Image 1 (spheres, rainbow, N blue to C red):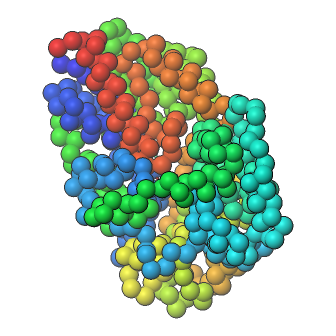
Image 2: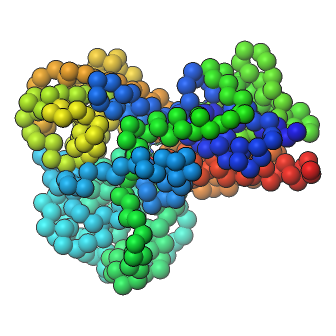
Image 3: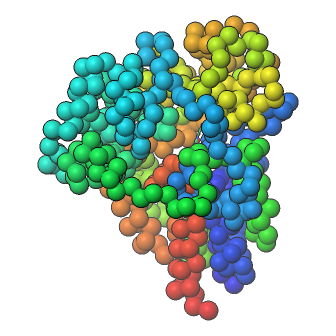
Length: 469
Ligand SMILES: Cc1cc2nc3c(=O)[nH]c(=O)nc-3n(C[C@H](O)[C@H](O)[C@H](O)COP(=O)(O)OP(=O)(O)OC[C@H]3O[C@@H](n4cnc5c(N)ncnc54)[C@H](O)[C@@H]3O)c2cc1C
């Protein structure tokens, strides 16, 4: 009987296990997770009528495998979009909140009207954006930072005031270091195909097909009614015969022809024909260091950033400013410890009881990570200070939660695609070894699901080649 071990029970590892139960129901599948619970970065705390997400709070509907997996799990009817009645988000500039201009597509403005009207960008900044129409594409190929690309095409002001905080909301990263090719390759593609972003936007307007009549139109961001943990819970219920080992840390993986040995920290070993590493890349590096030091070095080349989320709940009477939007993002240039603040009870009204507001702040980003090492009280104090300055809240929260995420956000820095090529090459030299998760080709939940499922398919294919039925 084929045996497959999955290391890591985050969404990527769970998606791999789920796919395997469907592809090879007779195989011996073991899922090994260091923590006492499944889900990894997905943690939902349901308390006093509030739904508090510790890590992610939604997933993109555009990327197929988030919605796809929810359908397979029977969760489609549980999915909610963000509040359609108030679709506003704010951006801070000089301590004040400005509405985020509507019509941003893939980080970049795609409508002239809202950009022309916004007070977030100065008249000079808007003129500079318009120059994109005239600037020829960069001739040189090779990787470029996200900041350099946006500055070159649309100007520094647009980068600092709009693109940087939007990008930070996804990667908690430093745009000067992030690789355009690994994060937003479609932007360079548009430049090459159309000569610039504005030209690309005009061309897209002409070619965008009308939506199919009768097709259900999903909101851009989705989440199950009582939190993303519903996906983890549904997956856990469907793992059937999978041997799930919680609270079990893997120490290393060794070659044991024709397969591998997974050595557990508590001494025991598991043999497997194939292994899926659904662990952060630095953890995977430690596990395979003796097996392939070059692979370990390439994996360690992917840096990570630490962040934290702090949620605070209040009676609405304690919140002087109406929570009339999804929240606000804070550019790095504002020099604040907080990088974004979500007004959860407006974004998802069912996540707080009637008459209460739930707010969630993100703390820590690339270059400003020390703050995450503070105590829970320190982090809450930082967030309360932010809420006092921006929303005028002086009352103590009736309920608060701090979730710390050390080395949680992989950074696709310059050279990421070359690192991936080397990682793929090294993995291919060990038939049966696969890597999945947020370190490689997408940090969002749908990407992680897709990577786990692809690893599962790869494992099944390899096994059928090595051990023909
Ligand atoms: C604060 C925050 C907000 C986010 N917001 C969003 C969002 O709104 N939407 C979105 O799409 N994405 C969001 N993300 C990103 C997304 O949540 C993650 O990229 C994704 O959940 C990662 O899944 P994963 O399975 O790759 O890794 P993880 O969830 O990190 O799982 C890896 C697992 O491996 C285990 N492990 C590690 N070492 C070992 C070992 N030696 N032995 C056994 N087990 C081990 C860990 O305990 C962990 O459970 C957010 C992330 C954070 C931190």
